[in-house]
Image 1 (cartoon, one colour):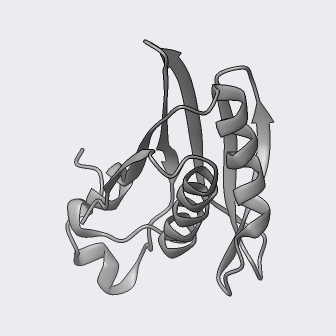
Image 2 (cartoon, one colour):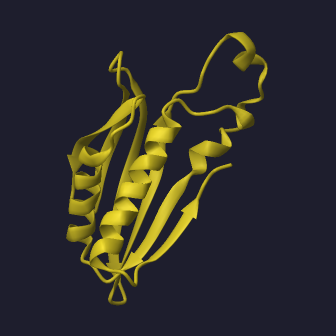
Image 3 (cartoon, helix red, strand yellow):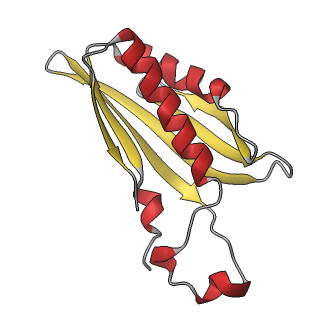
Length: 136
């Protein structure tokens, strides 16, 4: 089955910051997201990643789960977000739209989160290299 294009949206960051610091910034970014449609919660943290979930602001229903992974190699830290699970609008006209073109519920909140994560890293490492995949 084809996944929606938006499900491949991610940000990759190359930085001199330590993996631990990047993951701290990833946790902090969750608390900074202010959006009328949803909020981001930290679910768990390991040495190499932070698991996050995105919830509808009114119903508190989980709309998406994603991770931020950070690893150190060759003197540089590489961090990347990845969507692990998601919901799309079901029924009505949406059922006629091919899966590849459906929109993820809460996607705008995920993009705001990515912006906060990038801003946090760039504030401490202005030379960081950022690559954004929009999924569109």
